[in-house]
Image (cartoon, rainbow, N blue to C red; front, side, top):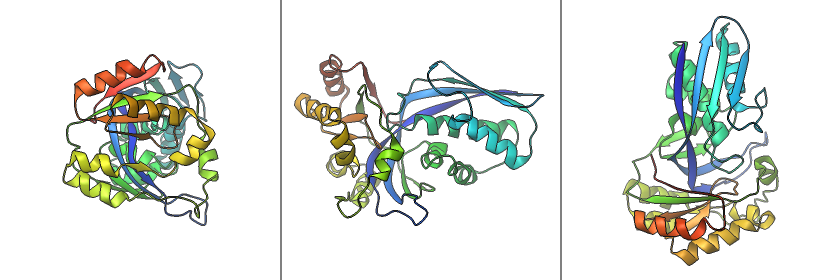
Length: 282
């Protein structure tokens, strides 16, 4: 049996963390949206055993270190299924970029195997299952604009965003998410008011969305990667309505009301960075 799943990248319009749990996990308060930039995950099941992962980016791990592999392994174990699983990932989302590429691939495997094996898991059940892989996987199961709280497992779907365009820039640096999260000093965080952003999304008020965007981790990642601030400065120079880092970075995105505005910024910035994209929310 065979299926192909689209695995969308995500952006954090708002990201805050109120505290760290006693088990070391982060408590999140985020507004996330999915965008047109996507990986494609082909899943083939057949008689036999084992799991194989193939990817067009040869430098990515294709064994148990890959979240897509882990998703298949844990599903097989949970439901006692003895079948061979071949996973082929066509990677378009930048790697180690704060855009949830690995998590989205894992979520795609969960959705695909749920259908191929007739597991009858609801979206909520798949999201809860995915939390053991990474805190972004539950959101990526849904892949639509949502408020995300708890350890990443509480997903409250929100209305579709108003018409807007994102210009995305991934600099030639990679950020270790665990390393950044371990450096959080909660006494020094300048928290983001995610609730005001949520209200703006609910009313589809573009200007208020732009005004209330924020990422509490941006100063921390920028401290270690100066490219983040340099890219933000270019977005401001070339006329983006707002710009900020996604996730733990280093990707920075600018938000624009019109396509012509986005194209102007894209053409102005791509001379400085090789990975630049114009996308819309899905």
